[in-house]
Length: 409
Image (cartoon, rainbow, N blue to C red; front, top):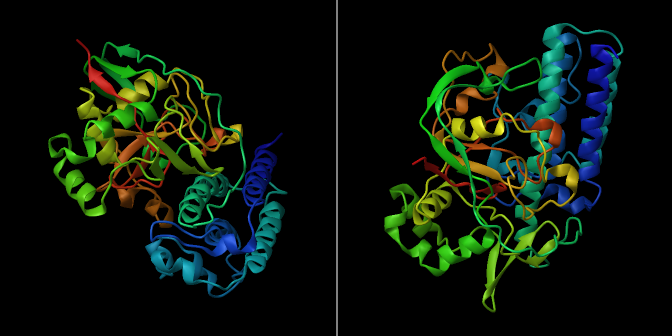
């Protein structure tokens, strides 16, 4: 199969996956925006389509008229070089275009992209198309995280997709991966796709360390709560403590205590939490405070990568259909994104691409923390050991969890 045919197959598959994720939804579900950081489902569908129209089709065919003259304004996310845009916090005000009109937009752009791929395309076009495919996978994950937040605020506690909880298990004793440190190579290697922020591959020095062989569990976080973890300022970073007090945090997002046990809102509705399942929906501040309480620390991103790089990408990812963390060991990929203690900064020698695509990652290299490993709503073909996710330290609506690390003795 030639490169154009491979791109065409990949494009069809990813676009169809997005459509399948929307199958459980009613029309009303597409338009809700529950907070400024989240976006309506309809906006995700339109924005990913706009990416292909604006950054692929209209560059290949400059004479091509825009599908709609206002879509550049409505569905541009943050590309300053491409013009003004609807404010992020106001995306939920867009009653129009309708859901049906956005679906028609997707169909039209799909037809044009597939027509384009009937013939070999230039390398630059192929690279942008591949970026757009992975961009859509990012929005598949965001679609589910944003929808979960919106549904959680509805007193009816809507169910996105019913699923059976994993069988209850005992709590696995914590064990540790050990790394002797030294000079290691990190960053993306090989010919496969990677985002620009994963490059260039370079060497870094690691001090000997140990990395926990599983994620922190609900039961362990519950003991942190019982020990006053959310009321003890000595465990928290200054900014974290101020945020915790200001927002009244007393448990992870979506948790509610009933009769001495914790329930949580999930994409399958409200269910009792299994003490052995990984804790999820915590901020960097909470993760850091828990690690300090546990006598450990959070890993540095390249410590995590050094352990994960030799391992296959296996785990509870989107394709499992669980849409919720499951008990288990290792869990280096899937279940929960893992906070590291590393700030999101450029690798040595990093140069952002010219033009609009240079805004994709580089402009966010400030006040963000790196997460690694993917989650239960991350597509399997989207994740790899070098992947660097990033969020502000107070973010909790993402499927983010905790893995401990410590200096080796």
